Length: 159
Image 1 (spheres, rainbow, N blue to C red):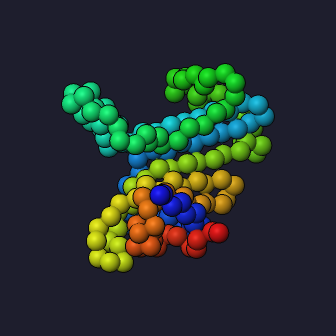
Image 2: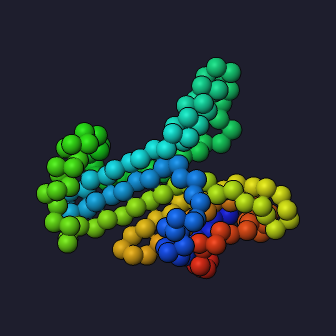
């Protein structure tokens, strides 16, 4: 049974040059009136990992044990279409930045030594929206949650 925890994040510590991050995916959304621009930046290690996983499944004729998805978002009834970088930048310049909402989601891996001394890793989804930053972690089970040693950039647990 998975356990999900929500934390507040100290933005100064999180964005400090001294704080190490293993970022896999960054999604930045710009919303102005009815127009939404989405910039997705996939880190090479994530792309390599996904490609390797797919190759393993097809070469060895294995199936995924669990269905795992990074995230899914629905923006409208129509499917989103990709645009070129120049078109993206041109559209962004047309936005009134004083009235534009900006939201950033960051997926990163956090490696830590747990309270019992064993090494472990979790996926952390960090959301930055309107000057408020939160982090969500989905743990494998209660044991992993109880053994979790949180990073210094966590302020407190919510809920």
